[in-house]
Image (tube, rainbow, N blue to C red; front, side, top):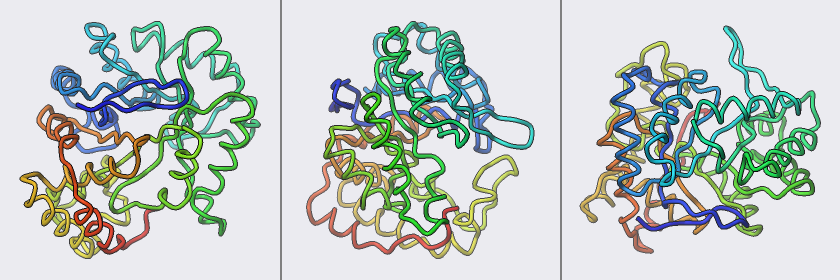
Length: 330
């Protein structure tokens, strides 16, 4: 697999990563047997998908434990990205950006991941009660201590900007410009897919102009762009899509033209709609690394093989011309 670099430190990763969250969190059947998840992680590494994306809140904690089990055998082959800053309670998820907490969270993640160093440590969400410079300063101290190699910001909660009448990533960019003064930002993680293209307007160019890596979260639109989901099929209550406005039967049917368009391009390349969707994300810039989630070994392999799909200019124009997704994303 081709490799790409993240941030000014030029940290190398496979062009397509592996989002580990679905193995333990947020999707139907996520709490699968550990051995099956381990096979998925190993399959991704075998294919060259070296970036493993996790977070302490996934599970919570169980996802990091899982990745740690896989790393025990293959640490030198993997690039580990994990996150801090969100606490999962019985009713709510709350932000915690206090410096002391961030440092304790890092130590706990290192133990669960069974590693001495985290390659990319991301702030999952800024704490409104703590100046982000203070949180970022504590994270920079972790780099100085040799516990972390690079820092990133996860653009979770960016949609609050739109609800307040501002651009989707306007608030995120302001945060990035503030923390850049404290310590360099190595990467930004945010949504980017054929049905979620908002980052193309401002956030992706901001990263490209400053040598900041861009980790494309949910590049398959929570599975919709794979073409394997049927409108009206329903989801289990513990699946985030059960409450997602775009996954009602009506909206899934309305957005089928996106899948039809991807399938049309895929047929010309002997590929799947999912692989074309990932190839489109890769084509948005050399600093972009999609991190599709996968629970099963075959999906991790299929996603990795998308790195070999070479879309033509005509393909890209055809995909760009597909209609914008209908339905709220909030």
